[in-house]
Amino acid sequence: MKKLAYSAIILTFFLSFNIDAQEIAVLKYNGGGDWYANPTALPNLIRFCNDKIGTQINSKAQTVEVGDINLFQYPFLHMTGHGNVYFSQEEAENLRTYLLAGGFLHIDDNYGMEPYLKKELSKVFPDKELEELGKDHPIFQVHYKFPDGLPKIHEHDGKRPQALGIFHEGRLVLLFTYESDLSDGWEDEAVHNDPSEVRLKALQMGANIISYVFKS
Image 1 (cartoon, rainbow, N blue to C red):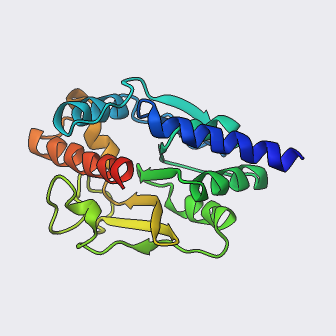
Image 2 (spheres, one colour):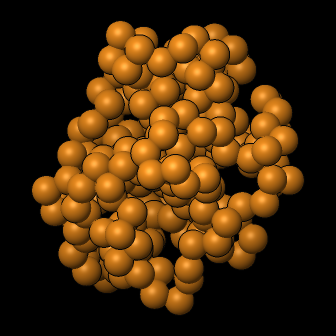
């Protein structure tokens, strides 16, 4: 009975966000990593998308915890940080249910979270692995053209930027952007003093991700 009630709640949430205003939330996780990094990033990305590609996203991004039932109110989750990430088994199951039910998670490594994240993703999808998206994937051309794939926004270890995904029945349910630092490029100009052309590339790639998710 409890499982049936939980399924009914999930169905109600997903039916509602298909007809109401588009919503984005920041994913709050445990482990000590700074899940709250880049506070100006999503507001700037939302403003850019609403102005440039015709989205109608609520201008205020919410915050939701991994294990919270309210996860299902948001069709798009954004996660970032520099350090440790930890999901309990219950949180991993909640996140998996959310993703398989139609939700989407974009994880942007702000530098240093990758080894912790991969370990925790194995709890969410023990039977799946991250796989690199080819340069011809629609996410790189849905609005703005990125023929070389994911753009490099900040330099850290001299590694190439990678867009890695997890798929379920052909649908991209999770995108992990690595060695790119997209969300740093979304922040207010004064935060990192990035050149305007670098910030624009970051915002355009972010808009592609948003558009791909909401219009797929």
